[in-house]
Length: 125
Image 1 (cartoon, one colour):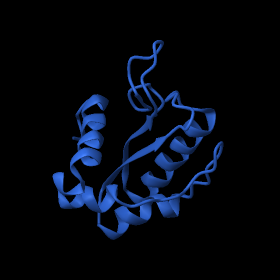
Image 2 (cartoon, one colour):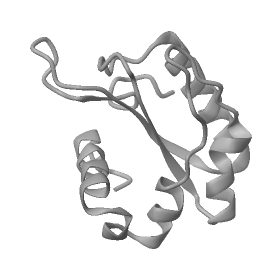
Image 3 (tube, rainbow, N blue to C red):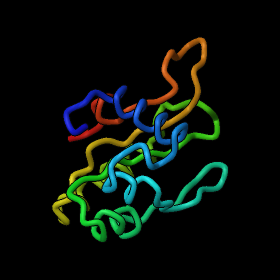
């Protein structure tokens, strides 16, 4: 999965939600089934201590971040980009890689994909 394209990640999440968490490995289950925070309609407080807690407890060496946009447009906001970069830096201190941050939305006539990979979009440094 580490070197897989973002489309493989999207397929993995689809499989998890369709087939249940038992469809993937135990380590992935321990990280994927942890709700880190709940958002309001237009904002979300994200703290690195909460994001990395499941990986530290697992113990894991990497995380993949995922969230949805209620607007259905998966285009990342400035806040999404800023939080992602902050989490990458926090992960570097912890020696936990942020492999990707995927924003989930819906397909529309002007966007053929229901998701956006911040790594694939060039937002990782």
